[in-house]
Amino acid sequence: MLVLRPVEPTDLPQLQQLARDSLVGVTSLPDDSERLGEKIAASCASFDSDAAAQGPENYFFVLEDIDSHRLVGCSEILATAGFNEPFYSLRNRHFTSASRELNIEHGVPALSLCHDLSGHTLLRGFHIDEALVRTPFSELLSRARLLFIAAHAPRFAEAVITEIVGYSDAQGHSPFWDALGKHFFDLPYVEAERLCGLQSRTFLAELMPQYPIYVPMLPQAAQDCIGRIHPDGQEAFDILEREGFETNSYIDLFDAGPTLYARTANIRSIAQSQTVTVQEEPLIDARGRYLVSNDALHGFRAVVAELDFQPGQPLALDPALCAALNVRAGGTIRVIAL
Image (tube, rainbow, N blue to C red; front, side, top):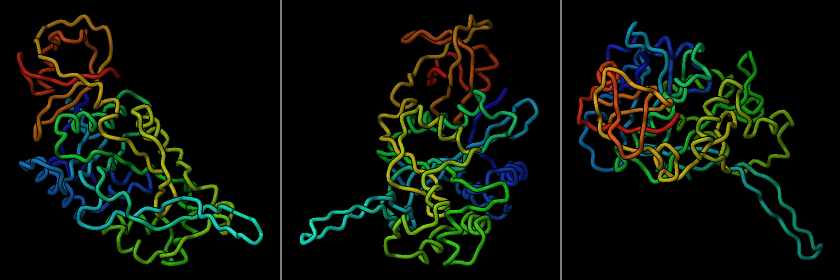
């Protein structure tokens, strides 16, 4: 059985292997034991905190096969993007120029460095074992974070964002980075992303041009990357799009991947999930597949399960599911259809 749970210090070796296998551009998952150790410690402190409001907390989850104790995926929630330092993005909007004498008005798309998205809750660090791509467990890994937000709403913002990894080729070259960022840092795209994972994006962002970059002045290959998703990032995009997330006028600073945005209260798994009472039964007449989680903090657990769910009625779970979710008869769980 695969169970989503908070990361623990003993997960470090396996987590580093996940980092090695992750897609270039997932900067929140660096292949560095010291940095990963710091992230694990920060996450453990976040789950242990008694925060009553949104703050700097970072919640790191792992997807574990509890039979083999093997980690097969991970994902994160940063409660507040830009809490300790600005969260930089590129704003893609039209710049309009006009001439009264010539009676001409013309709009040109331009990219401007900004930190407009600071203050939003950020989903990041999504990575799943290749064998589980496009399975219900990808949904679990991504959407269980939303069930956690639903259970602990005061800890998060009124809007949620995520950056989808932008296009780069099989050799790790990003046409957008080569046309823009590389001129200011003389670093390959892969190395720039690695440095962001080890340190922060702020020191690189602060060296980017502070004036608008007119899109038509970029090479066509770079223009074609704006808002383009890396093929391996399509699943992460699709899952959240079904949740009600939409693209907006912001793109990633380095590879021009799209940013998704949603009002927290409107996200499907938050708005439509229901809390029900547990009833322990040895046998279940399953009629559908669901995402199920408890509403705990440090003891948060989530699974995919075949259930007979009737709104407003106690939900029957077999002993194995009760154990995986760390709940007992009479306890409360959160449910939403897969």
